[in-house]
Image 1 (cartoon, rainbow, N blue to C red):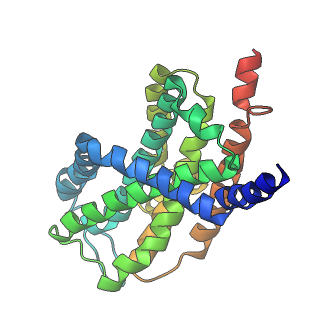
Image 2 (cartoon, one colour; image 1 turned 45 degrees about the horizontal axis):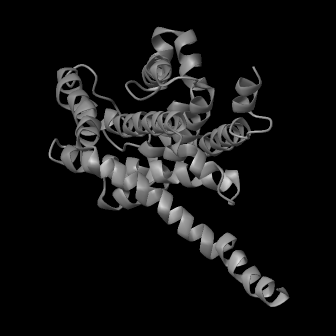
Amino acid sequence: MSGDTSNNAPRAHRRLGWDGRLSAFRGVVWREMLRFARQRERFVSALVRPLVWLFIFAAGFRSVLGLSITEPYDTYVLYEVYVTPGLCAMIQLFNGMQSSLSMVYDRETGAMRTLLVSPFPRWFLLSSKLMAGVAVSIVQVYAFLAVAWFWEVEPPPLGYLMALPALILSGMMLGAIGLFLSSTIRQLENFAGIMNFVIFPMFFASSALYPLWRMAESSTLLHDICALNPFTYAVELIRFALYGQLNGLALVVVVGVTIVFMAAAIFAYDPSKGLIAKRRGG
């Protein structure tokens, strides 16, 4: 009996060690990628939405909303060039909300229970889910950038590579916000309203469509709201990275907001003391 125990202990340790965690992480990411691959309409809608903004909205305002020399741009740029980083962040914002929607769906169908009762730490499982969503959003963003290149949106070639860390960080922040929101939703039907309540104010009240200095010229209050919006800093982090620069303030804000909302999501998904526990107790 003791021999069996000693033989099983290393196996259990391997299952719960780094090898086991890597295997679990791959499984979570692969499941999310398969779900994304099977939902072709999700990929199409993720591209159509920003492309409509780029081809119709931005093209219509090209002549009146071009920008003079503004960081990180070295010269006058067309409006399409300016809004592209904001549309990249919009893709990630919608994807973060859709990933959290899948969490609510999995919770209602009982699939999430299988994930959360595994022996791995809850923070690791939620982080794996978060990174799986980030991986999907990055695929969507680069597909959008490939199409935008034919629309005269041509960052420096190195910018596509330098934008990858920024996309990972911004995707983590927006995904963490979505994870926390998913813990507060009781029913799947309620999530659509919450998504609209979060997505559109975050997108429009940011620097995605207009620079903050132009906001200040029209309304000081609107400028302050945009400056407090974490989505603004995700947009600016991507914008500067696409042109080979680092926006230090945006980096600090994005990392800080990610930590806060990820910690809140981990707490909320704790069955003993989080929001889910409170709902069960009620």
